[in-house]
Image (tube, rainbow, N blue to C red; front, side, top):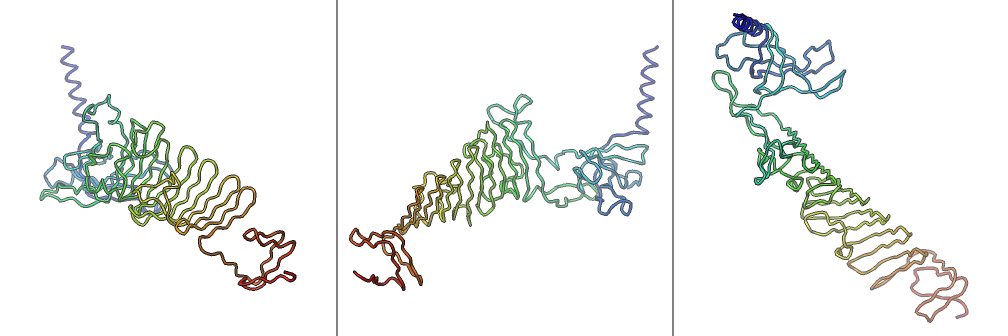
Length: 362
């Protein structure tokens, strides 16, 4: 008898709860973002929704200016979020008059992007890849609507921006206008930081346990759509290179851990940042190299001419063809050796273009 009474009480409570509180699927009909300061504009990122499973054109199935739960927020700060028109959402309906949107619901018309897994190990709660972080943002495009007012055939993401954290190896990448994500909206092959390389702009943050086959551990690198790159190595190396195309490298600047600085007007056409290792591999253009001991080298690699200032202060000029001094006055103090045959003592003044020299007493 007591059990029967208990069951009846439970049924009564359930019926009453359904009358006053109901969690249900809804479709977003319109979006009203917060545009102007309150109280001039009172739409605090709200949406208009209607019950998904009600086919009749009943005004009671529509809810206007519904507030959406936020991840976190405060006074004029926070992560602002509203679902998009046509999205399927889960809402709490109160007294059949008010509602609160909890969040979006994946469905076969709006499937989430894939989190790639190893075919040998599978993907489960025991496989860390299922905990990868993924935030993929793309421009909204309107879906097709059926005659009874239901959204269908949502267009896939195009030109997406993506932030992805690879849980297993703690690598991160931020990609702008991802070419891979545009061509493959499911992101089926995005399983490491090596997947996105050319055709878009990106940041990559490599961890100390990275499994990358291309980038060294602990590297931070920015890559521009045009192919230019800058990266920072764990040993203190800083490298900057400009390109007009992925396969057309131009100049680069490299700062080494020992304090050496190198500027060169050409880079290795490797399709990746050459990294200046070794220096002898690049024999085109001009190079300026500054050593930590004070030595400076200005080198025309193609002509074979250079100016070198050694750490001891010696200045060496070399040309395979000709060195020209052209000034109103050229003063040489001290001894000047010319081919071991001409020695000029304390003071030598050469006036003119130096086409010919004259020293009284010769």
